[in-house]
Length: 340
Image (cartoon, rainbow, N blue to C red; front, side, top):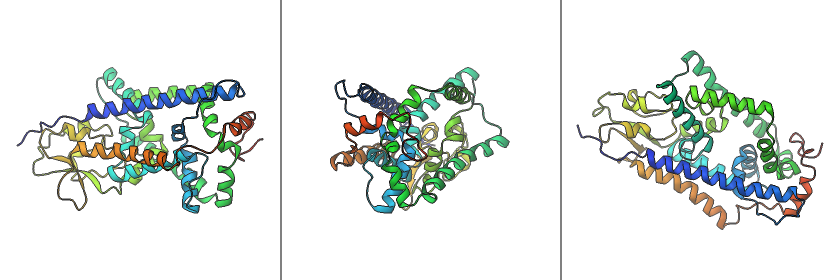
């Protein structure tokens, strides 16, 4: 038995997660200054709107994706959202549901809450099976509802009308106020989710996130999977114990699961060299986990870089349009896209 002496990649993954959280905070602060400019009616010095805020509008991005399929054009209202959406989907196809464990700020918070729970309870608490399976279906039901609403209830005319509507143009500002002026009910819901995430690892991600459901479904078709060499495996179950998604890795020849986030905790935990590894279909050699991580990061950087260079990153909504629509921000209704 050749011992696995390769350095774990979890520290590097943690650094990437932290860096992305700080990037989100930076984007949030820049957007806060932009909203302050709008609130002043244009009296304050203009602060540029950060395009990265589009990444927090997944439903608008899904609509933009459908619009792109129908017309071949990128809708100019929130182009960065579509670029990020494309990058995440492509990333999930190449290296599984990696966005969730490497970039997603909600996934990072969920992971930290779960680690806190492990310290409090001194063990990982699993949801009973008779509840786990039905609860896991919720995120797919939510995804199905969103898909039906966008792809089946909207034709090109209705879709374009919504994407061009004042509501969608300032959807980023509406999203900001949802958190800046959060209701008591929303606070209670978030509080309950935090408590549940401490008790049950990745509660939001595992049971409720429709975005994760989409990426999990796409990851099933990924050509690269974590493989297990049954000849060198000692059946120590270290991989299964390390898996944050409770996948029984020690029983699989190839990890095919919509819950696998490609965090590579199982690969790090394996004590035997080249027993757990990434390997694409039709490729004889395994992929070093560092290369797999590099691919994940490169896809994201490459997509955003190309978008910036090609002029598909910034939206085309002028500050004058923002100021005009901001006056009616409280009256804008998502159902009709305009003023109530």
